Length: 59
Image (cartoon, rainbow, N blue to C red; front, side):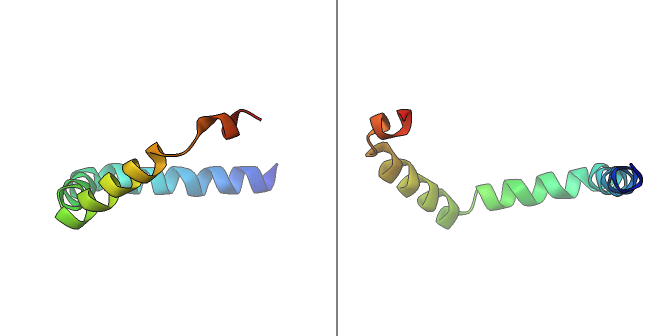
């Protein structure tokens, strides 16, 4: 139980850190999402994954 509480405290500290930096994090995410290389990468991934036969995933 003590370990669980320790992890919970760490989680809450990190969560508060994220909340306090929310605007900067969203700005960085927007910048990265707008990057032409990032867009090209995910477009290519969508094309490649679109060719996968989903029947193999049903097992």
